[in-house]
Length: 99
Image (cartoon, rainbow, N blue to C red):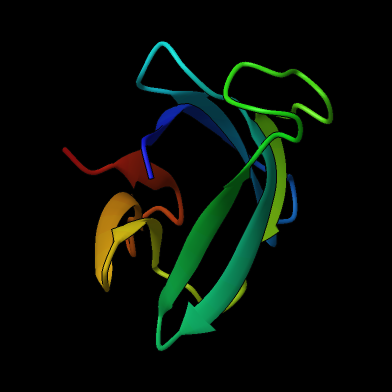
């Protein structure tokens, strides 16, 4: 998946994060995300929009995901490859990007 995190916002109660995404290539859009918690990692798999490569039917790029019990958020890159994009700072409770 070529979905890229461009920003995030933590909910006031710290239970959800709003992910702001884009697609790295010039083709395609996202429409949905499926999340699964594995240990302390929230794994995010994104799905393309309906109607072909550059169709905008059902396009979304902002997703609200639950983060209770998680310390990392990872995006699916293919074939059991997960890239950690955000990590929780245990000292502050805030979330920072992983480069």
